Image 1 (cartoon, one colour):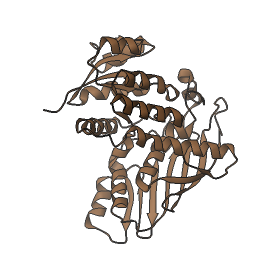
Image 2 (cartoon, rainbow, N blue to C red; image 1 turned 60 degrees about the horizontal axis):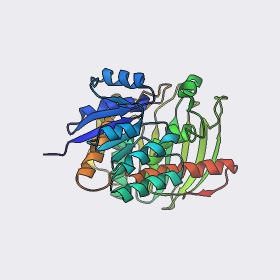
Image 3 (cartoon, rainbow, N blue to C red; image 1 turned 180 degrees about the vertical axis):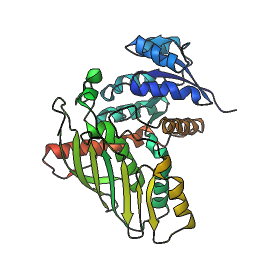
Amino acid sequence: MPRQWRHAVVGVGTVGDWHVRIIPQLKTSQIVAVCDVDPNRAKASLEKHKQGHVPIYRDQQEMLGKHPEIDIVHVCTPSGDHLRPVMTAIEAKKNVICEKPLEIQLDRIDQMVEAAKTHGVRLAGIFQNRWNEANRAIKRAVEEGRFGTIAFAGSYTPWYRTDQYYREGGWRGTWKMDGGGAIMNQSVHAIDLLQWIVGPVKTVSAYAASRIHPEIEVEDTLACSLQFENGAFGVIMGSTAMYPGSAVRIEVGGSDGTAVSESGLKTFKFRQSRETDQQLVEQLTSKTARSTAGGASATDVPLDLHGHNMVSILKAWEEGRDAETSGAEARKAVAIILAMYESARQGGASVSVK
């Protein structure tokens, strides 16, 4: 029999609500408690997803004390407030699944990763787009060497958010709690895909500004050129200033092939073609693709991928190994983003990724 996991959710806002929805759908899981500074918001989420029996707490320590049976704590608080609830859970010897970005500073991430090792628990992040079949197909092609020498790879997140989006909650668009703008909050997913598929990023050179959102402290648009450790060149573009917003694009090209993921598998052509290549393109065509939050709504995301990510995490932990999106792995996208921000502050100077 597979292990039965008992979950708690800290922070039941937009993303926390997704976790409340998904956890009961997993055959091996149940929610036993939630924690939120707004109990009414948490109650509404629980009742919406037929989990009204689950107790609600304002204080995480109290929740952990009253529910020693908790196996996993899901941290879904604002990005700049991940360290505190993650460390509270880890110090109580609970495994943690933390939403993206894992944190907004590398020293905080390193502290979390080290604490998990010290206390003998597991830490994983959420990067659900790794379970998009088009992205996984490109990843497999790289692993099989089908691109030959990779020349170029890029990620593009041309999205749109309203001024009202940034006003909601009081933390979006701030350095302290959001950690950045269109790149740290929205493009982090595509940046994770880029480094996961192609490999580590060596150096970046970026420019950033808020083009249409005068009220925010951070960027709504950033353009970056980069070099991978394998010698390939690349581009990262992210924006929340491109009305009405369109799909994320990931592209990889080299001496023997090119592939593009954009609302499905848009291009998948290789010098050494296979009969299954075109079948895969047709199977993953944009006609059946789900939305990727290009529009103005932050809730416009395919929840099924979150479920796949969580199932993968639980399977890895049950087998006694770190998840594919472990703390150390989730650190990589943040390291690239912080290097880009440093480059932008220096007027586009080349900055090495730590």
